[in-house]
Length: 112
Image (cartoon, rainbow, N blue to C red; front, top):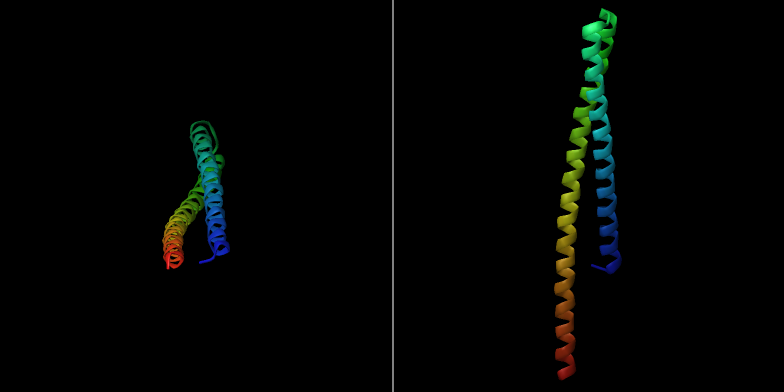
């Protein structure tokens, strides 16, 4: 494998890790919004009208559904990132072995 191919793999892994980080941040914001809505829901249940209660419950349910999908995406990106890292390590190991063999062949050729 050429050094440019290895660099492309490193770049791909970096992009994957960045995407994972962005998805995790988005997931954290959604979770925070859900917690805030839960507090509003409790307040509405204690003091609000029936209409207010229904409003918070429906928004909360929609956010919970979105949160589940977002968690699945984050896990998928984590898996892709780990596979990419494992592949990159294998390629780097193979390149190191190739470089070692190439150096040994050159030293044997020089001694003849």
